Amino acid sequence: MKGRNIVINNKLQIPKYSHICFKFNFVKQSSMKKMCSLFLALFILLIQTIAQKPTVVTLDGNHLTTTISKHIYGHFSEHLGRCIYDGFWVSDTLKVSKKDRIRLDVVEALKKIQIPNLRWPGGCFADEYHWRDGIGPRQQRPYMVNTNWGGVTEDNSFGTHEFLELCTLLKTEPYITGNVGSGTVEEMAKWVEYLNSDAKSTMTELRKQNGQNEPWRVKFWGVGNESWGCGGEMTPEFYADQFNRYSTYARNYHNAPLLKIAGGANAGDYNWTEVLMKKAAGQMWGLSLHYYTIPTGNWGKKGSATSFTEAEYFNTMKSTLRMDELVTKHSTVMDRYDPQRRVGLVVDEWGIWTDVEPGTNPGFLYQQNSLRDALIAGTNLNIFNNHAERVRMANLAQTLNVLQSIVLTRGTQMILTPTYHVFDMYKVHQDAKKININFESPKYTLDGNSISAINMSASIDSNGVTHLTIVNIDAHNNIPLRFNMSSIHWKGVQGTIITSGALTDFNDFDSAAKVFIKNFDGAQKEGNDLMVTIPAKSIVALELK
Ligand code: AHR
Image (cartoon, rainbow, N blue to C red; front, top):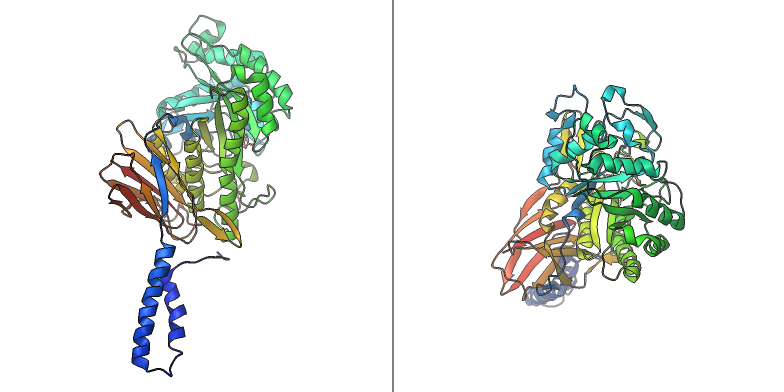
């Protein structure tokens, strides 16, 4: 770590100023010393007052009109690297507890954080996936090459039934993305019929033959993925027409209306959103947005997951904070066509994307997960909560062993990453009422550049409990906050924190967990105000009741 600019640390500054006094040795030493001490004490007090003047934050508990959809806390599982195979779906011989070949320690960990939905089968893989290859007796399923991810052989042993069994075990909603890039309208239409119809037809008979009598009634339906890129290199005009065409035949069956999600923009491509909203908003429940945090900003050399400088950390957080601008600007475009906000913005791929861990398959996108990842997750989730009027769903990429994972596995071992703990901490916001917040963040400055140090979100749950999640991005400075709580009823506060000695700290298979949730007792009630100092590089959750 290098290059800190501003340090306000009174303890460190004492010797710096005290030596000046003792240069005046022509005056009587003892009285001079007393004067100096007095001067020093006053000076320190002054510095303390200036340095620690808390930032004032106002919570508006009077206008609770927006619900933070639990689907903002969604996840993503692609046939990529070790997410499905050797992740969720393991070999018969692996000595872990399993249902069929689904790994149950992973299921239990995910249930604990109440994952509300799981996106599958891709990503880029979705536009090469032919669902009929993944049903029926496993030994008879065709093999294919996973051309997007490492060129490995896909044996299709994990298909529709296995995925929906996984969702049932997780008690989560499936979010399935159909193939537009290389699949036909008929193929997608038949998949929906196979999944959702309770009428007698060849498709529903086939489903029953394969062991599923009742329709699954899948709700969330993606119509292609990244159609501007791996999903077919389409123009927005062409894709909008395709979306309308495929959507028309992806039918709503009895008691199974589909919520269709159109493939959305890559980061700041506002024209994509504009064209899609203009031509195709009618059939959409949601329009997606993909944005990844790349530490160096260079896709060729993205940077390491666990070894980085403070300058790289600063840039990473700056690029994470861009999510706020992206969501704001895409929402503004959507507002022009949909002022009632009927169509949701679905950020169904987000997270940090680094270089793969040394020695691992570059096509598998396996990366470790440090305290920095936790700060990224906390920041993004705060942004989504604060934009809950428009952001209805989001999916971190990806759940297991790929990109910003919440769980990593190695053989029979499993670890929970710092990002996992953020989802655990933030689950209290799921389906709670959003509280609007007003404050001006202090700055985190490095090498003459500044970004907001503090971000936060707040909600009130159905029991009337207020929850605050606060991220301090600043790598060095603790930041005091005074919350004006005049519109909130509360008597006491309890807190938890995620932090660690270094931003690069992570949880590994061979060492004890370093980054996890601990109790935090740094918040107090002063009158009706809440006073709290947020430690540097930390995420704090406060519960007020
Ligand atoms: O999450 C990895 C890949 O990133 C997805 O397959 C694709 O949609 C995106 O480009």
